[in-house]
Image (cartoon, one colour):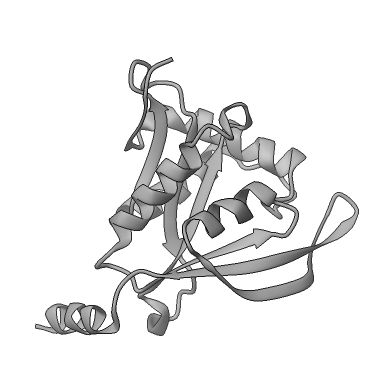
Length: 182
């Protein structure tokens, strides 16, 4: 197979994104949602990311851009205005393509796309999601929080680690605020 690349999301990606996300809902604890997503929810989520001009990447093979291997994006961590420079990172891969460096490619690209726009990246990770924990540690995210027994799925209580990575110096963010005000 050819090199894995990242590209922008396209309308015909939605059914494959839906399949990836519903696999997680129905089989894994990376996502605490219980009910499967609808295609409309996937479209609305994607459109809200794009409307904010936030990065949303699709991983695919260079010679097969129509097959989605995974997707990643950022979204508001908290809607309160004081948190406008903190964003939450989301990466999901088709399980048949995990362990092949796609998550690292996605993480690196999302982090780069967020520089100068956000001060902090946040991720909430289920403590049983060893691959995601390893990915965050590889990219020097710091575990800054632990929430015990906050999720309930598949008949068991689940814990969450919160990871943070500071992207931008405070002075750079203050300059962004000054530029927006003028």
